[in-house]
Image 1 (cartoon, chains in turn blue, brown):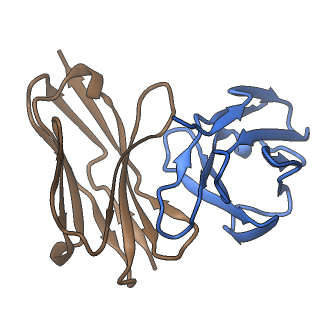
Image 2 (tube, rainbow over the protein chains, first blue to last red):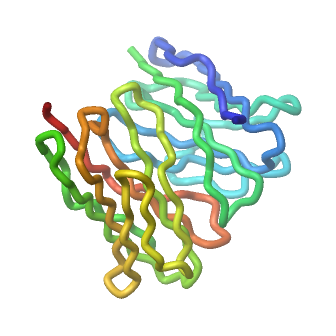
Length: 114
Length: 114
């Protein structure tokens, strides 16, 4: 069964460094998402992406964040200058049709900012 | 505004007991979708079920059952004859019809003791 994959599974970085989290959505999916889960808290929506554009973003998704689909398979989340509070699990998700279909989640990248 | 409330922060049961996880949602939309996800200690989000707002039929899948009641805006999840492997955090979630972001509840941590 097709799956969303994410790399790396864990990343440790120093405050102020840039990080890029990578996702490979399910191949025929058209809509892509990033969510964040701070340890012990709820899963929060960050951004959705369709047709090479952001379709919706939350207030969390400020200028430090950016998303990109650099090729036909990868979907990335970049954090330009990481802060301690960016430490969280980041989930990528995808689906074929938004607004009615289940979003299929990847296994997550656990980011620790020191 | 849309909101999902999982009032039970933690539940502890002994193996073979039945347990019900509560979920109450708020939305003004007539078309919406409800989900349950399981998050085991390894951290990934495991999709369990999706329900659309037009289908109030209850569903049973093995030891799992779901009770959707629009009159009380609830979508409760029951595990029958719980097992130690059911120990996890369970999230209820809501997607607005035509929307991009899935809104998660705070989660209920279930401990099943042998």
